[in-house]
Length: 308
Image 1 (cartoon, rainbow, N blue to C red):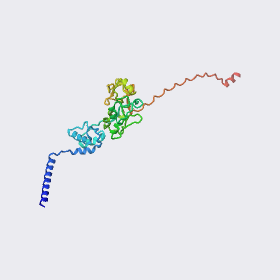
Image 2: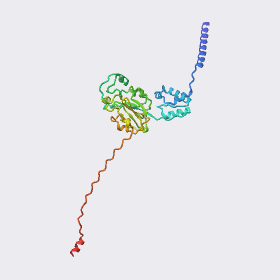
Image 3: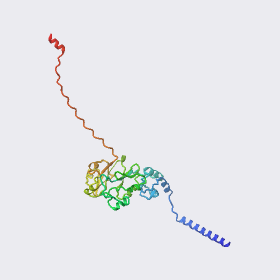
Image 4: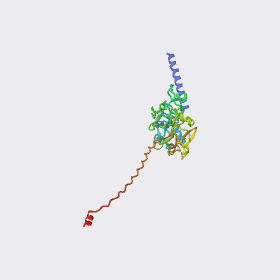
């Protein structure tokens, strides 16, 4: 009996000492978390897509609170929640934010099956990353869309799909949140986030082929050949040609579409512009009326007077 009582006393003493040690450690090494972080995290959409540049919504919430403490939220934007979510966060933190222009993912490849035919058959792992690691893929173009759908898998919002007819990835801009997941997933870096533009209108070079003109044209009939005509035509200095491929700076572009007209390979795309009305047909000139020589008319009354 004394043995059992001693054991209970010893175990109780050990438990008490352990509790005291844990309490002291918890107080000494406690990490303070600003309660605003949790409040901001509740306002964020919870997609954890990483489009903001931070590891999930928790990291974004922490950065927003720190930004508020430093006096600026510049450069912090949740692409999924958009302006509405950021305004709610700014109101909570007592800050103001600058309204950034919405963006959308753009697939910079125009090489459909019609213009970029297959020359080989790939039988390996059906992912863009694996196919790209093996070489040019199933076509002669080593820069274009592989069509395996790594971007589709990466998108959490069902905003991108592979067109079974063209073999290219296509973005549904009504669903795209510009989170950038598809940009990171593409091994050939052909997907880019660009300004959505007024009424969804934008102009961009739908090609990233860096081969010389003759080589790129053999691989794809609508590739950019780096001729520089678009660069010379642009009145705003928005186009540059580098590594045999032209690029349009969406910050400088004024959507005049002069570059679209002069591009010899139709590699520059203009999206969501109204279709120009057909030119009116010229009116046919009216046929001149023939002059009719009126024959002299002799009144019956005058004839009777002469007979009299």
